[in-house]
Image (cartoon, rainbow, N blue to C red; front, side, top):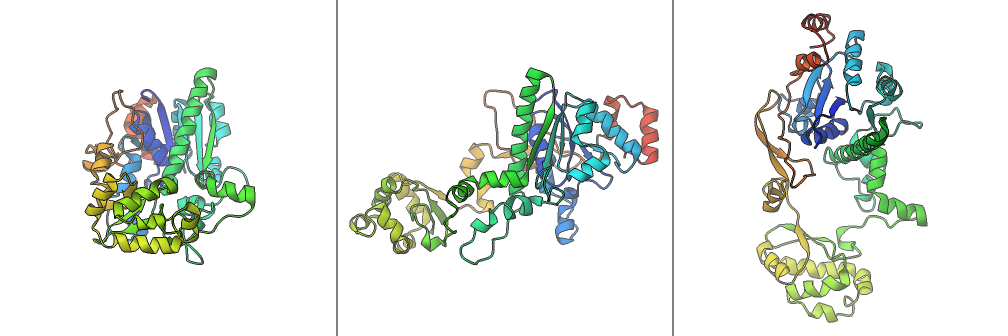
Amino acid sequence: MLDNYRVIELGLWVAGPSAGAILADWGADVVKVESPEGDPMRRLFALLVGHGQTASPPFDLDNRGKRSVVIDLATEAGRDVLHRLVKGADVFVTNLRPEAVDRLGFGHERLLAENPHLVYAAITGYGLEGPDAHRAGYDVGGFWARTGVAATLAPGDAPPPQIRGGFGDHVTGLTTVAGILGALLERERTGKGRLVETSLLRTGMYCLGWDLGIQLRFDKLNPPLARDEEINPMVNCYRSADGHWFWLLGVESQRMFPKLCAALGRDDLLTDERFAEGRGRRHNATALIEALDAEFARNDLDALTAEFDEHDVWWAPVNTPAEAVLDPQALAAGAVVEVPEGEGAPAHRAIATPVSFPGEPQPPLGPVPGLGEHTDEVLLEAGYADDERAALRASGAIA
């Protein structure tokens, strides 16, 4: 799909590299520029908990299929090398903080002046302008905490739950890819590149747009509720007798409630004046949830599944990660892929990026690159002769 597009990625951690990984999965030539120490994600477990685990599946997911080039941007010669690479690129992706990018000489104004054909994608925690544009974000800060997302996840005065890593970064990476493709389409018409900008903050607020829209319109918002207070018991999580959690998906409560009652053999709930209508179910939600809890606690999930399917009750299992990666439907949908062996990681099964193009030949997945594995290869393509590369290596500008 993106054959013959060259992407230069000056990124680390997750948001920027995740955008580059999607482009690489789609066939783009993504050149990952790393410092001599490498992207910190290569050492994730050592950085988080201090142990000696050298494998980093999170790094592998967001960097497979790229070519790794080590350039020391603290040196003038190293910066010159990167400028030369960018002049031959279609896309430049960075998630370094704006002042760091400008200090190094790779701000969008300069690069677009050097290469008017370039699509420059800037990913930040909080945007390019404003009093906190300089702040470090990470997805916990920029996507979850500051946007209001975390505050909606726990009822009452309970502390926000711990956040699983990468959520906000990956959504922001997808957002960035959409912006890049829009700019590339515009370039097809105009011949000119442009700046594309997104942030963890903007992406997170868009994801919470229903709640924030209500807040903006009505200046108030219902607080998050405990499970046993959920206003629509037909969209709630429950537990079977054998300990499996599942979620009912009865968004259209009035249509789905009779089906659930039939599945449970509890037609009496339909005639109970507390539950017969949606308004009553809302005002008596705690009592209905208690009744449903008692019913579900009498049956194993397999038995419930048979009744749900027979009576067209919409539901979904609450899979553990161990269950999710073996879920037959996830496998049939292409959610797990085989990544070939490379210098950076052995052959392994991994999670697919979330878009396919049925009917078209899929670009083969590339391996995880070793640190600096492709430095000579990429610089040779950029016109650096053997003696020039040797001199750059001797000076420490490349590795």
